[in-house]
Length: 402
Image 1 (cartoon, rainbow, N blue to C red):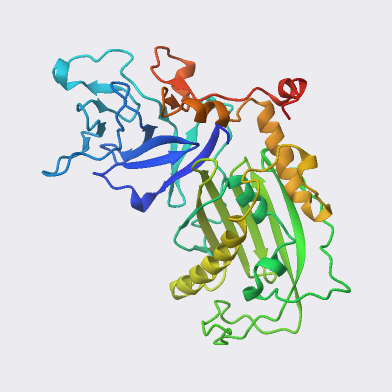
Image 2: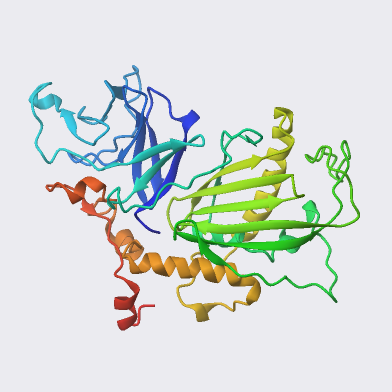
């Protein structure tokens, strides 16, 4: 897991104006809320007074607001933190009196796009940090988007990303969607070459798939469900072109060209909860079947596909992607996986990988860590220690750690 990237925190529609949302990302707890202007804010969740959770539950009984004047209120002693993480009211000193300089928590840059609240979790300055991925089709004429699908899955996000860029699993994992049979005498995965792209933060490749005939309108699948393809005419055989790649460690775009003029654009924004769990925010765009009545069938189809992947990925061993290439046997069809792991090594070299061993040994026990925010570059006197990071790969290689 890495700091200094954009991560999805919560769907916009799920973040109300009077109720905060407690979220775990990269192993630490965060709290998201809306300030007095309706702007989404994301803070470190641990109060620097006595360690209470800012997004934790208030006592049962009479309802008391947890957001006052755009500030999140600690449920333990009522300390009020604004969207910049500053304590602006400390009741025991008297409302309106100045709080100690150390009475602050980390506040993270936020962007709200595509129906998702994103937070930049790290201290990289704005001028050098990675931009949030631009979904060019969003709100463009001729394109429509399904409601954001959120999947909570019991496996590590890197395994999820690698599955999404794998062109050789469809025939075996997704038989209900037209890839249930192969010719054992002729089958192989066509060659493809990943190439770096997207402002130097990821890679891309195109692959061609043999696809079965698409059904005519009103044709029913074996399961009795209407297919979502609408008026796409049936053909005896067709080639489907699929583009895939990654952006940063946790974002995966996929382009599916069913025909030259009928296309899906899918975006997986993945939120590593910890080393064992991931929350996936799935944005599905299309330039055909624009009537909202098609949203339901397409949504259902995507859930079935996701369910098939979840069944496989929940059994992976080890849970995390191996650090050493000799720990697995990769073949040419895994070129995209190798490219992704190459990019992870580049992020390692920046010193952004979290030291999960050191973190898990102390966090929540005798220590509370925080992901460093940009404000730590310009101010001091922080109560919580920064989450421990691994040294770059060169230093670790000298110690035979990779």
